[in-house]
Structures are given as C-alpha cells and as structure tokens.
Amino acid sequence: MRVLVTSLKGGVGKTTTAVHLAAFLQLRGPTLLVDADPAEGALVWARQGSGLPFEVSTPEEARPKRFEHLVIDTRGHPKGKTLREYGDKADLVVVPTSPGALSLVSLEQFMSELGGLPMRALVTLVPPFPSLDGLRTLNYLRSRRLPHFRVAICRLAAYEKAVVAGTLVQNVNDPRAERAWEDYAAAGRELLELGAEG
Ligand SMILES: Nc1ncnc2c1ncn2[C@@H]1O[C@H](COP(=O)(O)OP(=O)(O)OP(=O)(O)O)[C@@H](O)[C@H]1O
Ligand SMILES: [Mg+2]
Image (cartoon, rainbow, N blue to C red; front, top):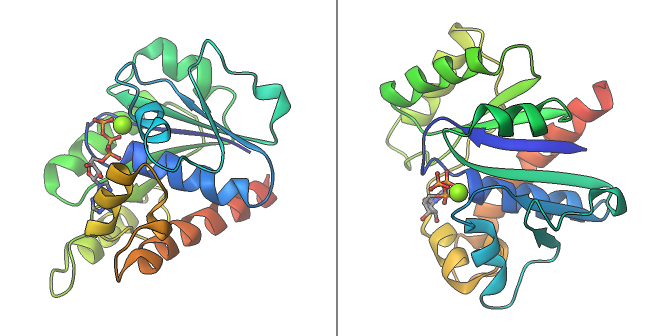
C-alpha cells in the first residue's frame, strides 16, 4: 500500500499517524516511511532512542521499490508539487484532523485542493470522556458526507512519551500505552479494508 499522510493544518498528528500506520503495515510486510517534511519530524523520531521497527528515509534517499508498503509524511500545508508527486501514486491520502470548528473548515478546504484523490480524514487528538468532541467531529464528517475513518484517535500522554523515547507508543512506560496503540491498529485495519476494495 502507498499512503500519503498530509493536512493543511500543522500539529494535528500527521507524524504520529505516519509512524504508527507504518508500524502497523510493517507487521504485514517491509515498510518504508518517507519523511517529506523539511522539519524532519519522523527522521528525528527514528534517530533517537531505541529506534523504529521500519526504515525511515528522506525523499532523496528513498528506494521505495524494495518495500511492500510506503507511508509518506509531509509538512502542514504541503506544496502543490508534493501533493502531485505523492498523491497521484497513493492508494489513500490520510488527513489527520483534530476536533474543532476551525480544523473542520481547513479539512473541507484541503479536501477540495486534493481534487479527486482517494482520501479519508482521521480524527485525532480526541479529548477523553466526558468530552464529546470526538463523537461530534465524527457526526459532523458523516453529516457532510466527508470520507473518514470510523476510529478516532484518543489524546493520550503516551504519544508524547513515544516521541521523547524515539519509540512506538506501545513500547512506552505508560498504563495506556497499549490502549493508544489499539487506536492506530484499528485505523490500520481500516486501511487494509480499503486496500482490499482496491
Ligand atoms: N493522539 C495523541 N495524543 C496526544 N498527543 C498527541 C497525539 N497525536 C499527536 N500528539 C502530539 O501532538 C504533537 C503534534 O503531533 P505531530 O507531530 O504528530 O503532528 P504533525 O501534524 O506531524 O505536526 P507538524 O505539522 O508540525 O508536522 C506532538 O507533540 C505529538 O506527540
Ligand atoms: Mg509532522
């Protein structure tokens, strides 16, 4: 599978999503994460600590033919050139979206920029119960008929710990580490369903 993770907004969980979807795909076959963000968030993540269980490379060094799965992480508000270069070849464009009205406005704007590319919004950074922000966001996406993942990713401190430790969220010392991974594993399974549909 080729998955492009991108969004108009910054700080919505693109790199976190790219890393954990790559980890999910790596369980099924060799996976390459291409860090197309000049800020190199994924490369920095991979370089520190215990490392990530898949290869991470710059766009220049990427040898995608050697891999079964490819995940591309971009900066917020990517250049049109980046979208064309990776979007046209992608099986799916994943657009992480945090809850909140402004996020949803930029999502709709971005979706029209993506034109006809196959895409799904992924609701991220969902505050814990009793907040209903996650459910509200999913309901909004449904009502607007915007394609989206059924799962929403919870906001959990374990993700920050994972960046600091340079590892995957399931490996950090946190009571909710496994819970955090389950969200991305569910997103990964949805990704495979889409792949199977062709
Ligand atoms: N589900 C989550 N729960 C808690 N914190 C999260 C979650 N997802 C991401 N974060 C944290 O939020 C911050 C932004 O996440 P991330 O770097 O993945 O976003 P981004 O969209 O790649 O940002 P940028 O646009 O700057 O590249 C990071 O500190 C990350 O650890
Ligand atoms: Mg990033």
